[in-house]
Length: 543
Image (cartoon, one colour):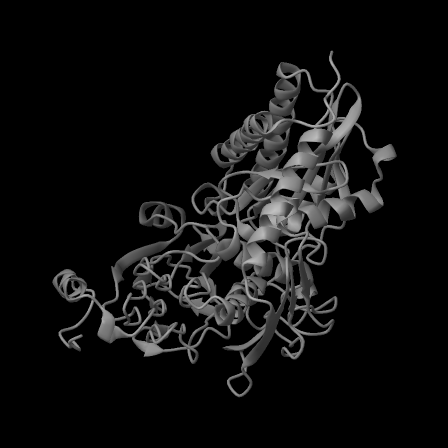
């Protein structure tokens, strides 16, 4: 076997990089196809990644949740502190759902398996997936600490040298409402890691490479240079913006203070001045806050380069300990997605001051996760499905309707939802006039009407947002619509779990995206198309 060259030429790097991504994509597809739950199989709430022996990200699956790709390297680095390289064997699988070293809340399980080639550790296969249940009170908005939120799994070996940890498997099975689905998804994650192992072994054998070290350095180094070049195009300076979000206390909304300092080819993002952690699950651990902050910057500055460690070397993200963007254990954190999605908005609101013609208007975030549980004919059910608001108008195009952002999980198809849960979808329509007007219109939101069909009823939770603070338009564009929640025709707020009975009708109107640019500059043909399609009412301001 020939030795790996000290440096790879650009063409070889591109070929190997693409092949490596293909290996991870195949693993992600295996995870998707063999999973049991709708949250993985239909909503695609998972990721797969290859990391180097120190936990640096090398390549991710093409379809990956942004927060997961930001937190998985941190998790593997934490795994290595407990299980150093000298303790690892082929067939080991390490697992945890600790929010403070992982994705920020308990339903997401993080898994990593060491990759060996010729008995040498060459990296890790990592996977994260959102479980359909993790015990506890689920996504209850009135949780007060993490002990109410479900089973906590510290850093442990799920498999040791290929042998399953039956005690841990039994513990998980005993603490979740739908054990067959949860364990099925865990086995799918393990299978995905084995798929990555086989794919990388074939890649190394085909190109006669002893390891991935030289390729890793080329990938990370080239990406770092590209990101620094992108940052260097942003004018130096300090840019500050305030973003307000709803809390579960009507008298005290939450405040995100975001400042971005640009110094030549590096950036520092600071959230000093943001609201303190609060006695509700609206708290985002620092790793999750960092993940969605760096994602916001990458989406504007360097969207076309595949994600890896090189994207974050020039970016520093800080939030004060004890704030709701960096809470202390054992704070409740189940609703961290709500906060994290607003973190992306906060960063973009500040970045828009530096790049006013490149940053889209605010989207109708956060993604709404509708969680249901109960019993049907004596059998337990539990799961989560998602609905999305409108995407913010872009600097050169209208916003897209009902597009999930900044996460990219999918809406659950109606047929799957009705088959899996005791619910009937009565209506699912676009809402006219929900997108903010502008030279470019914000994306329309949707109205979803659900009826409970279960004679035994069910428990539902919905973490409401955008009840007071609409998605903000950009550069003269108008704001998007606010959210509305109705139960049996009466307005309600999702600050407590709902105990629904058979026949109850739950109606959700999601927020629309903000507009971009003055409406007076909108093209007359675009206005007519909107009217003909029913996207807007009859009122028109002539340009």
